[in-house]
Length: 144
Picture 1: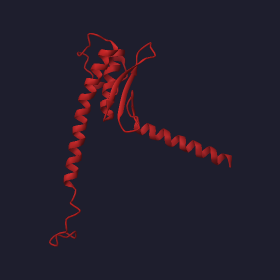
Picture 2: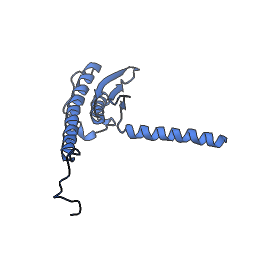
Picture 3: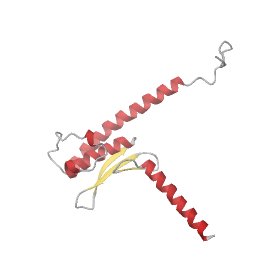
Picture 4: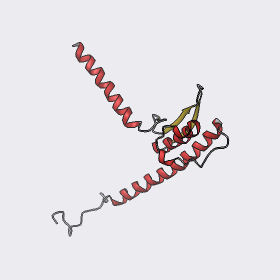
């Protein structure tokens, strides 16, 4: 009987880990209970964190994180999207405030793009769905 209790606990733990892995596909981000994605990063050699913002999509939060980690740790940083960072775009001031500002700018830009893409995709899918309140046309049949 004790084995059954232990297996029940381990299976719930495994389910929680699987759910967590499905939600967290990028570094430096997490999902709030109400569905927003947030990004933050710890400052090197400090206990404090830099808040990078709250976003609608996980990609936007991950891009904000990538920007901040690149400015804090340089080209050797582990990024979510290494192909999206341009080293020519250097900050003159590498303070927490300037990093936060740049990361939130990029995150907001990506969030706007991602949100508009999701909206346009959902609008096109909605227009393709049949009107369920319309009576069927006797001329057409499903046998064709």
